[in-house]
Amino acid sequence: MNYLTLGQVILLAELVTGIDENTLRRISRIELISSALNAPQSEYSGVELYPDFNQKAAILCIRIAQNHGLPDGNKRLAWMSLVMFCRINGYEFEVPTDDAVEKIVSVAAGSVESEELAKWINQYLREIK
Image 1 (cartoon, rainbow, N blue to C red):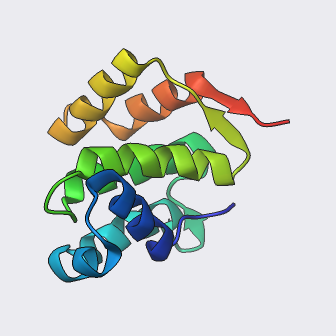
Image 2: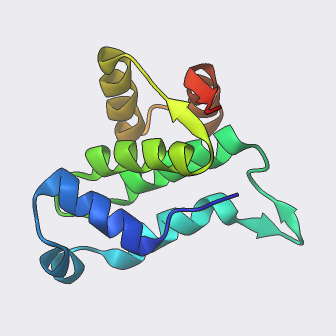
């Protein structure tokens, strides 16, 4: 399993906000972004809390959107991180724009549970061949 690094996500944040990396590192709550990035890897007594790929993807997206590590652009960063997480693990994640916007707004509002988001993600995942 490949996980996004903090450096990669800061670069994504730079793309979605238009704010340069150095400024983002000063004005952002990096610890909240880092926490979100570590969540999919969580385990307890050697047992993964999120064993399935779509569960890992869902918790990553939820935590980035809801942790509010950036002063602006958290939903966009959550979306781009989700797409990139899928990509670096050999999946295409193509969702109709209206569906994507509706879901990420619901995620940020806290009205989508991780299990529901994991199922939604799974229906749009396609393995890259």
